[in-house]
Image (tube, rainbow, N blue to C red):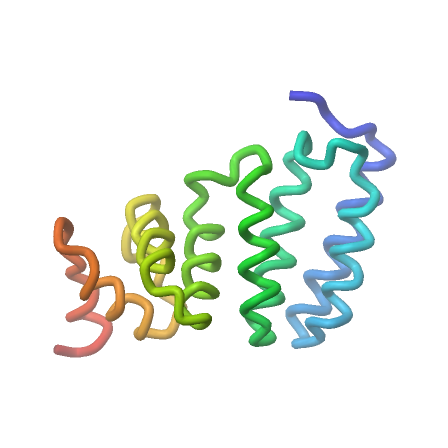
Length: 153
């Protein structure tokens, strides 16, 4: 896989770090501006670059955290075209959550099970229990034992 030129990579990393700091402070709009600015620096075809994967992960995460599930779904679906995205538990988790919130429960279950299969219950540790409860209603072939632990049942 080709690597970005060092100066360009440093620019992208700096913009991403600024976006991360803004997101940490709850300024998702500001974070998104920085992430998109960094994304636009990627050479074409953008889908060749691993940096595009983590930038779109950050973008989709910010979309989700601000409650913009439609943009989150779109950006995280786009991320799946980038290197290393398929099988990434976090990307599948956020995409599944966006799909769940949009009422697309079939696809949500598919993505959430991919997240669970990739990293187990740890993927859901800091998330609302509703996603793991939902998954337990759809996942007949696996045991989701952490559900009892989290919900106290």
